[in-house]
Image 1 (cartoon, rainbow, N blue to C red):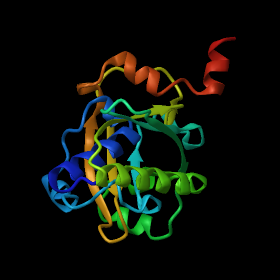
Image 2: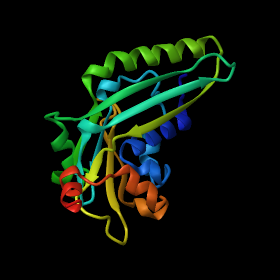
Image 3: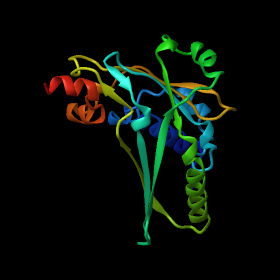
Image 4: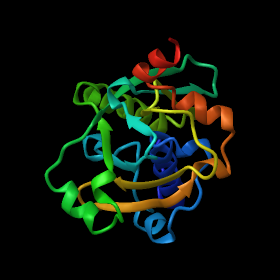
Length: 211
């Protein structure tokens, strides 16, 4: 279905926050200016090839985009069978991103940019088209997004105190890069065990720990 206005802005922000593990803490602390610029953004019809998220992870976390899978699913309220789609994530490398992010971020060199892997773009577009057909037919459903594999692993045990992250979103080439959260403390609203599950111990670190 197509969402416009504040609902569209909230949806894309929540998806982006999920990608950055901030969904553990909910969709909060997003600048009003960003919400305003995303007010007409429709995730259901957006060009997903242009959607990117930049994250400054904690120093104890190592990005692992090649292990990340987003599972998007929906259930129709009329009882008809739903559908799920696995979407792979990769580290993005777009020449113009660094210059744009340098204008927004305090530590642009520490940012890691994620995007949907090209191999899954056609499947995402087909999924979007199916959502549009349901909308046109007046059918309604409930959607959800789950992250598997994590976007990063931890090099050590998670230290005490705040878990600060910065997050930026590139919703489209027209909108450009926008700040979502800077210095946000994931621990402030997330359950500690949920954080540990979403950021597993790195394999090499786990191997040393098991000796």
